[in-house]
Image (cartoon, rainbow, N blue to C red; front, top):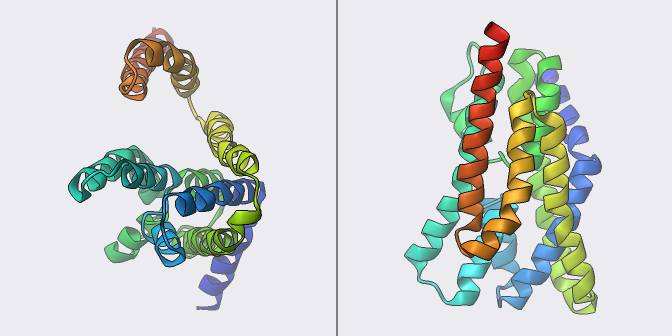
Length: 237
């Protein structure tokens, strides 16, 4: 029990990092956005705990602002969160020990988002397998609880924060996501996919606005997969 508590605290300490601070700065912008959308303090903090992934929360707030129906908003959030499924599939085998209950893995999957996933994938291999769930529980829960506090504090102080500052802080998150995913990519195909996405996004936005992200993902991901297969064949030859 002492060892598990120790590894949990090490996960807590891992959350206190540059990526964690950048994520917190993005939640400053989200708090301002939520207040502008007419959400209450309790609703905003509850959204951080239940939805957690920042892009999904932004989608939900956008649906509220547009007056979308509840089923439409739920579908939009679910569609946004599908991108996390590959992260869960990659992370869970790293967390699973020989006697890890399934409910623990289901519970810890709630904490999966880009920041926690990147930090975990960088460090889990140096942690004893039977202690990985404790470590990730400390990491994930600290990120969630800390950002719940950030949103609560900023929500109360949002009136004194310039809108331009909130917008600038909010944009730090996609920049961090891009640099983190680039650094953690284990194969060249990941870099190819990201580079193609950066190029195709603005081009498709001018051609098919509203479907630009979907098109960039399908085309960029397909070409990156083809690049990966071709590279594997060349290596085999």
